[in-house]
Length: 304
Image (tube, rainbow, N blue to C red; front, side, top):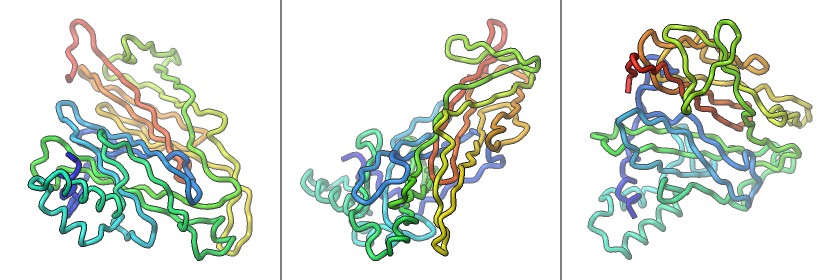
C-alpha cells in the first residue's frame, strides 16, 4: 500500500520548465507508450514510460491514472473530490482493511498503476464510444493518461514531474500501431562507424557526429483518415524524432522522416552520458532509443 502514501502528491503538483527543452538535467518524463496504440472498447492496454532520472537521484515510483473525456479537462484526469479528501491524510494511520478500501476507491477513480509495485494497465470501458454514430466511432475519442513521477528525495510538490498522454480509442479500420527502431548509425565526420565498447559509443571530445536512427518497415503505416465531413482519405504517416542529451549539443532537436539524422557535438571535456531519441508517428504511437556515449579514457575523467 506504499502507493497510497504518495497519492496526495497529486494535489497541486506542477512541472518545472527547462531553459533548453533538449537538456537532461532534472527528472523528466520523456515518452509514454500504449500497447495497443489505438485500442477498441473492451481492450486491455499495457503502458510503459521513459523516465529520465538524473545521476544521483532515486525514483520512488510512477503513478498512473486513466479517464475518458467526460472525466478530464485541460489539466488531465480529475479525481472525485470524495476520493481526494479521503487521500488527503496519506493513509499512514489507516488499518490494512481501510487502506485496501481506499485503494479500491482510488482504482474506481481511475488509478491504473503505481510502478514498481503495480504495472500500469487499463481495460477500456465497453461504453467508451457509446452514443456516437458509426462514423464517429471510426474517428473515435481520446482518453487521457496521467503520469506523476515521484522522486525519493522530494522536498515539496514542485519536485515531482507530471505528464499527460492522449490515447485514441476507436473502431478504425486501420488502427494505429507503435513504430519501432531497427538499429542505429553512429558515424564520425569521415563517415566511419563509431565503435561501441563496454556498452558505450566511444567518442572524442569536442567532435561532431551524425546519429541516424533506423526504423522497421512497419513503422511507416498507410491508414484511412475520416474527416469531420465523413470523407475517407488515404494517408501515410510522417513520424518525427525529438532529441535529448545529458551533454554536448545538437544541430537540431527535431528531425522528420525520412531525414531522421541529427548532428551531435560531444562536450569538450570528459563525458559519460545519454543521448535519447523519442519517435512519434503523429497518431499517438511512440518508441524511443537511448544511446550511451563516453569520452572516457585512462587519463580522461568523466562527469560521473
